[in-house]
Amino acid sequence: MQKTYMQPKEAINREWFLVDATNQPLGRLASTVAKILRGKHKKTFTPHNDNGDFVIVVNADKIKLTGDKLEKKIYYNHSGYPGGLRERKAKVMKEKYPQEMVERAIKGMLPKNRLGNQIYRKLFVYKGEEHPHQAQQPKEINVLNKGGKDEEKDI
Image (cartoon, rainbow, N blue to C red; front, top):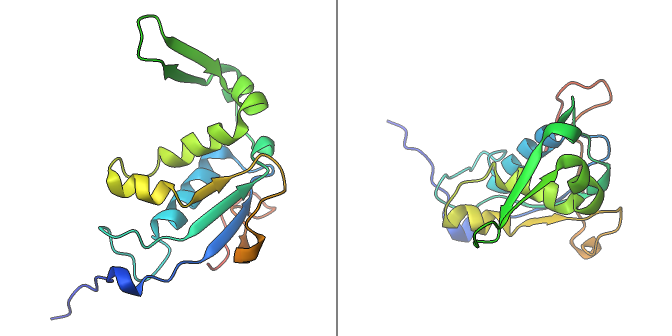
């Protein structure tokens, strides 16, 4: 009988990946990044450990929303006070807060517990092309190929 392999925390090897969000659909980008953050792309995936990699997302302001989501999708925030509900359309979020829009999409695909919070801290989203993580020598990966079909590079 073969036992399931459970990777110990000491044996975790983390890498850095760079994702360019230019003309990428928000949901597809978010699901791929969440998978990498969680570590599901590795053979040594262990559900109760944070064995995922670090991810840097650049060009968050050039993300693509399909259909009429720019006009119809609404982001909600509440201050905690009566009447403190704030609504913003996706168009406003993309213009003023593109980093938050991408972060929310990715965070929504992570576990809703302490492990999820720990995983979320390995995500770095930037509005433009520049990022301060050159020293980590991130590997560039593509979410989609030019044909529009799902094709992830070997990570």
